[in-house]
Image 1 (cartoon, helix red, strand yellow):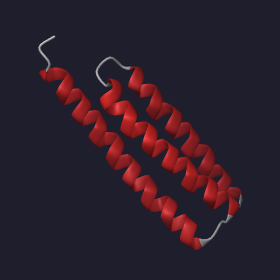
Image 2: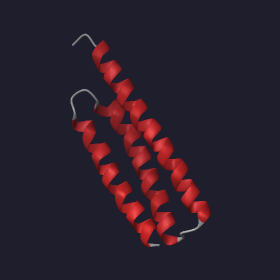
Image 3: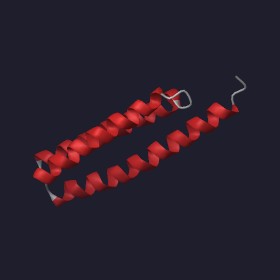
Image 4: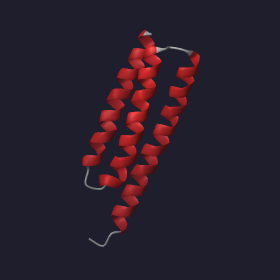
Amino acid sequence: RKAAAWRFAHGFGVGIAALLLALQPGLGLIYLIPALVMTVLLLIRGGKLVVDPSVKNAWRLFHTSNLYLLVILLAACIAAAVQLSWPF
């Protein structure tokens, strides 16, 4: 249970940092919307692991965190590419 609580705390910090990146001029809403959705999903999975520290919930959080990383990186790349292609 203690490790699950630390994992939740880490997920919370990572989520806040990811959401703060949306304040950068090159990212904006194209980055913020998927980052917000994935951060909420990551925190929900982390909360479930704290409440019920089972192997099943641990694997779900592991898979969600991998998907989280994919979505965050992809959203940042797409937002930066779209920003560069705009004429203004």
